[in-house]
Image (cartoon, rainbow, N blue to C red; front, side, top):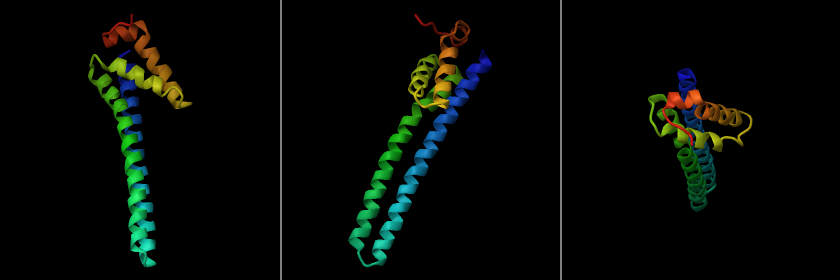
Length: 132
């Protein structure tokens, strides 16, 4: 069961890191589009519209990327906790796994795998917690 717990921790870490990197890429995309739109407007002589385009798109990109990045942190935290044997990690992993349930097909598989590990008798013994 230790192998499954380590694998689950790695999966949560990797999926969280992928989500965080995707958020960063999304933010950079919006900054780039805002920059190009602003530069095009400035080239046509409309500096005010250029600054507005960059400001609006940059703000939207930063906001969405920041929110997505913050939402990916609990998954990485659950993976870290599972890998290091923290007592709170199985509960956080179950919550994160259930939130992934509707993300078909990989999120559903992760939710089922997380539930199987954390709710089985062997998994509870290995993790050191009991479900009432």
